[in-house]
Amino acid sequence: MTTLPAPPPRDRALGRGVSTLIPQSSPLSPADRAAAALAAIETVPVHVGVLQAAAALLEESARTSDDETARTAAATTIRLLHTAMGQGSEPHGQ
Image (cartoon, rainbow, N blue to C red; front, side, top):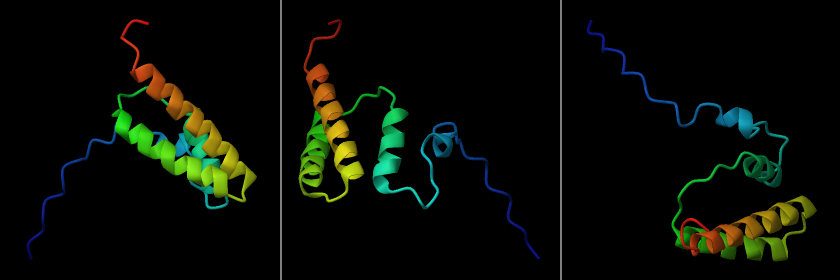
C-alpha cells in the first residue's frame, strides 16, 4: 500500500481572523455581515472601476430593497465608495 505525503502547509496569514471580524453564523442577514465587514475595513489599493461598479450595483439595491437594514448598509457602503473614489483622484499627500 502506498501513502501519499501530506500536502505542505498553506499560508493562511491573509485569512487568519476574518471569521472573528465578520460573523459567520446563519442567523445574520447579508446586511448584518456587510455592516460587520465595514466595521473591520482596512485601506487597500483598489482600481476605481471596481468601486464604480460596486456603487452602481448597490445604488439599485438601496433603491429597491424592502429591508431597512439592507438599505442602510447599502447607503453607508455607497457613501464610503464615493469617498474612496474621490480620494483616489486627489494627488498623493493631500
